Image (tube, rainbow, N blue to C red; front, side, top):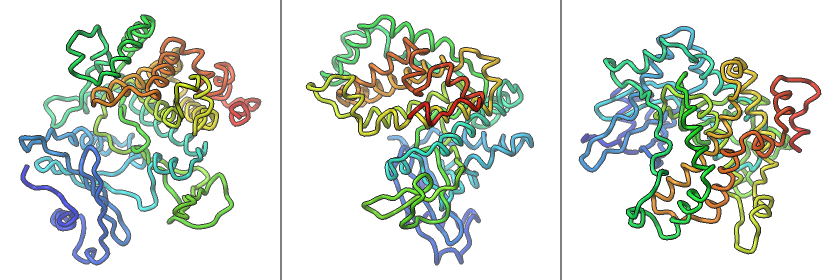
Length: 417
């Protein structure tokens, strides 16, 4: 791949693809950011675009990671009954497989959830409600629909998506002497603790075996990949605590609709997968906000440290319970098909937390005290999933079930206060 996008040439590229017009040059503003891919935000007077280019490897080649996402968007346009999902993601305007470039619509008045939460330090349940509802719509609309699976995975078509069951236990089986040359010295403590609990590995094996590919799944639902729409531009000085939040340093506020729309973006890792895993991915990212805010020292007991977090779990519980209830209210039939669905979600959440710790160690990161706490929480989620419901949501399983059925005597906010 010889053509590399930059802030200097991106507008000319969009002009060449007839996405922009020459008259737009006067208003163009370009912001570049380095993520897994090279991303360029192109803002015009009345429109915005996200232009992504996959990074080439040492040989100058790419794996065309954008191909499956392009195919998924083609599916949403191909099947009329899926049209309603298009408003819940970014629209792809152009795909250039030779140069590994993807051009998508972007909203001027949108912010990703990581930025919103870091800036606002509040967690409106209205956002969580729409996250759960939106994710459920994708799962519900494609659940056990063979024509959609075939459309996405057909090998004779360009860019079929993968349909293999993930190898969750890779690197977590019995280790050998080679591990000493692969990780930091203190990181060996992770494997010592992991192998200390036979029940933990057994739970990992069991939940891996429950993975059931049955619908379209995103598989990378971190908070950066969830956009929430704001009202107009950032404003100043408001008293609406639930819908407007101010950053005291930047004097910037995000003003939200009472039920702010959300969009799920960056579908590069989509698959025909398990909805329990997708929902667990979202929950694990909320729990990361809590776990990453821990102040850990050898002088503080683990249980005390969990209670002294900068973002207490109690502050997140209303959003966590609302998210799950919104999901199940939109997609109630999942409990008929899979009565143990919530148990699987809890266990997959623990599995994802462990895999994240393992991934950091593979990058030679140290096994920190926060990582130890994460492992302990993950162990509870995996080995005691029913008991974990009360820990995560602040509701007993009975109360959570009642809340999800929208029984008026159950008030989620009161139960999680």
